[in-house]
Length: 110
Length: 118
Image (cartoon, rainbow over all chains, first blue to last red; front, side):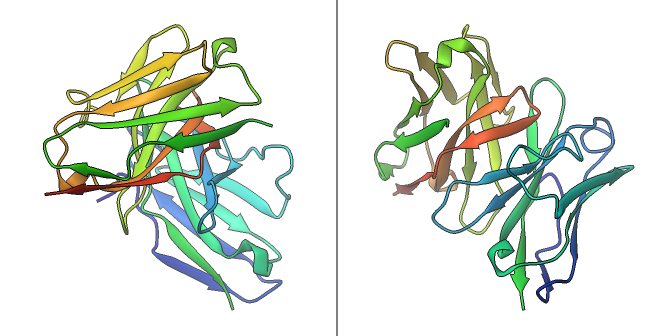
C-alpha cells in the first residue's frame, strides 16, 4: 500500500478538464509545500510535471496545474488532449530527505 | 539535457544481491544535486529507495536501510545501487534519477525490470 492515496483512474473527453487528488497526512503532504506530480507513459521515463505544489518546470504546458489544501494535493489537466493519456503519480517530501509516492492514477482520454 | 540510463541483471536469485548502475550524461554528478533510486513493483506505485549527494552523504527509506547501499563514481559519472538478501518482494522496475533533495525527481531513467527468482 502506497503512502499517498490516489484514485486508480480518471477520465475525460478531449477539451475537458480532469482533476486527480493525492491524500497524505500532516507528516508529508500537509506538512510541507513539496508535492510533485509525474507523468509516465509506458516504456518512457517518468516526467516531472509539477513541483513544490504548483510550479511547472520549463516546457510543461500551462494546461497542467497543481494545488493543495490541508493533507490533499490536486493535479488538474485542462483542455485534455489525447497525448495526456498516461499514468500520473504524486509524491511528497516526508522529512529527513525522504520521499513518499502515491499509487498512481491512470488518466484516459475518451 | 540530463540523461540517465540504468543497467544490470534482469534476474536475481532469492537471498542474493541485486546490483544496478546508472550512467549519467549531460551533467556532471560532482557538480551537485542528489542522485538516487526509486522502484515500482508490478501494479503498484513507486517507492523511494534512497539518495546520495555527490559528497557521499546518503539517505535511505527506513524499510530498506539495512539492505541498501548507494555509491557514486565521479570518474565514470555514474552511481550504483546494491540491495542485499533479496526476496520476491524486491521484484520491481528500478529507476535511477536526479533528485532535488527529498523534494522531487527532476530527471528519471527509463527503468529496468529486475525479477527475483526462487
